[in-house]
Structures are given as structure tokens and as C-alpha cells.
Length: 446
Image 1 (cartoon, rainbow, N blue to C red):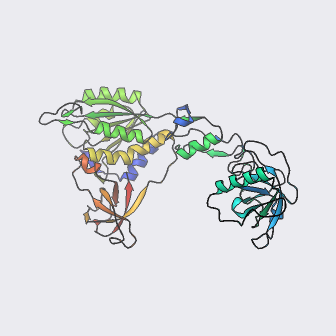
Image 2 (cartoon, rainbow, N blue to C red):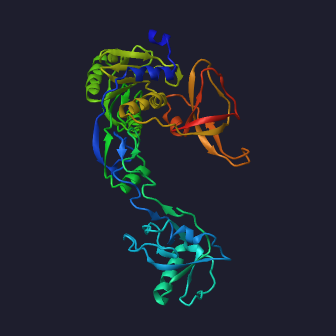
Image 3 (cartoon, one colour):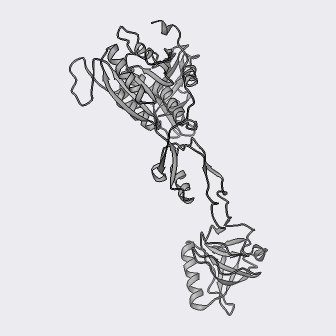
């Protein structure tokens, strides 16, 4: 086929496809925050109020005026009069004056006049007569010590606290708005929601979010020899793998897979199913039928779906050379090789970015790990290649500082378990003829 006379580099092919797609408005929906994990925020999120909403203590101890502790040490402690206790969830009913302090718990509101908190470990309760209740001991549990000191004050009416350490202004204090300012953008549009984002929203009372609606990705599998997975294949038949592995990939990338079943090797059947799928979905993926053969109906069917049609037919990559990239009526259409490994490799490189564009998701760096290659990996110069590898944890006996070994998983592109046993992929650029055993490589994690 003449399309293969010009093989585009993968990065160039992806850029051509992305550039041909329009930048239209994205559909959005309102979702309960608790159910938004992994979804993409559609608009910038503003804080409705500061966080925290009041200045509070970050430790158990005594709220003080820092000036009253200056110079305090174990050999020359300071003594402060205890005014009372800050009750949790209450506004303190008193104001500190020079030489006074109040008992405060973690998260308690700092009273007026206080600008620091001395940790419980550096204090000692003193009796009304000025006598210590035993020598200070090393505190193993702050909570236990707090309860003990509260009990002593309640039972014996002790009013003074010995301070054996100076504190600076703001020490052990979280100020109003220190975490988030009022009207601050706390989450930006395009962000994929993580567990910590949900926690932050709940702290601000944001229980609903406007998120990007999952784009529908149509998936068509083709071939007279392909049957559903729940059927027993006769000689010459194979179960449909691509529809389901691609559906899982789409789901993980934030899309909504729509499966249109298995289409026979008929141009009319493919045109009918592809037209219906593209009308109902935001993008379309067709597996099989894109290789150089007399049964190649995918490119012909795509050409009938709308302008501009096929942009790329053939990518300079292994596996996945016979890939078709098209834009029809403003929607991406991708023709993937039928071999499961090739289909998944190309889908990760091409389809995932397309879903990201449909969601307007903020681009994130891909997770990678450095590892030492275990064997030589040959490669053909002039062609980009991706090699599946297993990661093996090592000890310092294998590597000077420990780390990982990358063991290539060699296999043909129709052997799905050659990919299922892999932990990641190693990129081999087109200007080299392979990588030698012992070299450090960057493994892109799956």
C-alpha cells in the first residue's frame, strides 16, 4: 500500500492528529465530591473561606505570650500563672496578660494575647505553695501527660506552670488562612482528583464538584476469525482480546468505553458500524484490518466517515507500524493493528493523549524507574522501538546501591501474556541499533 512509503515518527504522528482536532467546549456534570476520585475537574475551584478558619494550636501544651518565655531553660525556668483551659470547639473566654498561660489541646483556638504554644514536654505543674509534684520525667506519651496535669489541677487547684524552654512568636501555631486564603484557587481545571484533593474539599465544605464528563470512546473489533470470549473457538478462530483490553485502558485513562462488537471482514459492514459508532461517541478505535493485506477495509471505511479523513497510515515504530490515524467530522478515528501487544502499545501512545485532550486534563509526567538491563536488546536503526520488561528487585550484591533490574519480555506481537507479565516498557530511539546488557535504562511503568 502506498501509505507505507512514508512512515511518520510516533511523536510527529500524534502531533498531527492532535492539531487536527478542534478545541470545542467540553461537556461537564456535577458530581458528589466523595465519588470524584480519578475524575477531571472542569473549572478552577475557589476556597469559600480561609483554612483554618481561626488561629489554632498544632500541639498539646500551654498557650503563652512568647515574651514571657524568653531566657527560660531547665536551669532557669520561667513561671506562668494558669488561667484555665481552652475547651475544644469553644471560643476562649479569657485574654492572656503578661505572666499568664492557658492549657490548650491540638486544634484548640488560640486565646487573645497568646502568640505561641509551649509543648507539654517542656512544662511542669507547680503547687499553690510553690512545691513541685516530683521531678520532671521524660514524657513518652504527650496525651498521658496532658491528662495527668489536668487531673492535678482539678484535684489540687494548682495555678502555676513551670516553663523550661523558650518559644518564639508563632511557634506551634497555625494561623488563620495559613493553609488556604479566602477565594484562593485550591484546585485548577484539568486536575485529576486524588484522595488528598477530596480531603481538602471536605475541609472547605465543598461536597459537590463540576467535573468533565467522561468522553465516549467507541471500540470496534473486526475479523471473520474473531469470536466473543465466552465462546469456544474452532480451529482457525480466536477470542476477541482487543475490545476488552482497550476498554480497560480507556476506563483507566478517564474515558467511557462503548463496545460495538465484532465486525466481519466486509467493507459495507465496517462502514455501517463505524458510522453509527462515530455518531454516538467522541472518538473511535477500530482494531485489526489495518495491516497490508487484501482484507484491509479499515482505511477505506474511515475515508467515508468525514473530512479530512486519514492523516497518517503507517508509524515508524515497533510494534504497531500499520496504524491509521484520522480525523472525521472533528473526531479522532484510530485504526490499530489486530495483534494485542501492538494494539495496546499504540493505544497507550496515541489513544490516551486523545482522551486527555477530550477531558482537557493537565499533562502529568509519566511514572518511570531506572533499572539495569539484564541482556542485550537489538533494534533496527531508523525505527523507534518499545520493549516490554519485567522489573526485578535487587540487593546491593547486584548493584552498588541496590535498585532494579529490567528483564526484557521477548515475544511476538500477538502474544498477549508477553505484555501481561511485563511491568513497563523501555524506549529505544531510532538512531541506535540496540542496548547492551548492564546499561541503565528508563522504564516507563504501565
